[in-house]
Length: 381
Ligand SMILES: Cc1cc2nc3c(=O)[nH]c(=O)nc-3n(C[C@H](O)[C@H](O)[C@H](O)COP(=O)(O)OP(=O)(O)OC[C@H]3O[C@@H](n4cnc5c(N)ncnc54)[C@H](O)[C@@H]3O)c2cc1C
Image 1 (spheres, rainbow, N blue to C red):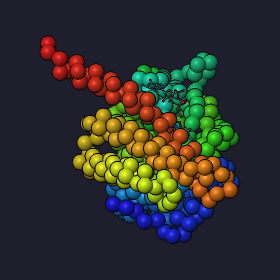
Image 2: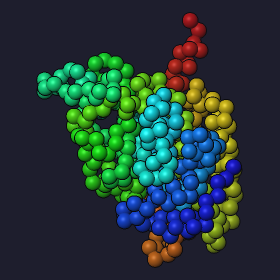
Image 3: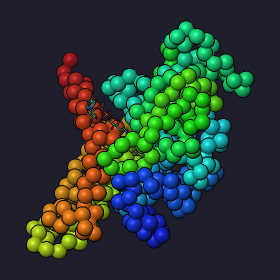
Image 4: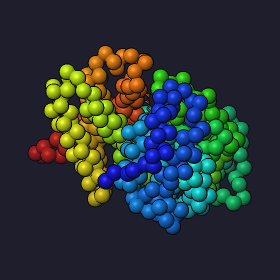
């Protein structure tokens, strides 16, 4: 299953991939170009404004973009996972309010849920709190009054240290918030113009600089139940995790395919030595992608998360190896800035794969825990 991008989009991404990685000049163009190609509608039911298919179709399209530019693929990811949260939210009014603009690329969707993923694994506390509007805040002052159309209202305070696709003046971001009244943590959708929401400048990153990645500071921002994606984050997130993680896998798959193609395209003395290992790695990549699609099709990752964790770890290994083959095939030419090679960018893009949450070390930690739990369960009483 491969998604074919139009020649126009492929050409634009190839021409500007370097710029999208090293500067933010073209950042405003990415979202509209992906939207014009209809990419955000893939895997979205026609009844919701989409072009049907399922998440696997969206994953193939995202992979196709990642083959050309990881920055563009990451913007695609932010937009598409936010759309996925809305599709599975019980809040139909929220979905109807935001989906048309998100599908058309008029509004940018962002997922600030790294913190929530770490929270679910017991790694860190939630960094944004929700104080019921009827109570007092930490300074003892009364909080905002509830909106007449809302049955519950809160005040948000905290920080989102990272979120990608925060297009200035036109974004909505999903964040997890801890309820100060002792209720379950919630997932809320916070638009850019909500009072108390302040976006930092784009973060000063070593790569992926065209992704509109920034931090948010949230001070006494009013929200109510009309902004709720889900009232119970621990119940909602495990069901979203397979698609969230599988969409992250597209970065490794697309980049590995491109690096392997580049390694194969280089002639020279290394070719006979690298030919067989490249073929083997390509086969492993294909098998891993097939396993990913199979697990998504039968939904086994919802209950067997460890299997998906292993696939993402394997893909992270594959992409590092693929970029290394590209370097070895190219030799010293890879070090020349005046050569038409994309190696240096591929190397920087590959550096992102192990650290995006859930990071490789977190996934390995989860597998160790899982192994320990299985061992305890299997031990004789
Ligand atoms: C370009 C870019 C874009 C990003 N976009 C987004 C976004 O859109 N949304 C979003 O939510 N986040 C985003 N992030 C954040 C990203 O997903 C990671 O959360 C972040 O890079 C890791 O945070 P940290 O280094 O502060 O981790 P730290 O908590 O400081 O940890 C440092 C290292 O230790 C590891 N570690 C920490 N605790 C454990 C543990 N208990 N077990 C095993 N390993 C552990 C971490 O994985 C990390 O490798 C982005 C990051 C980058 C670089």
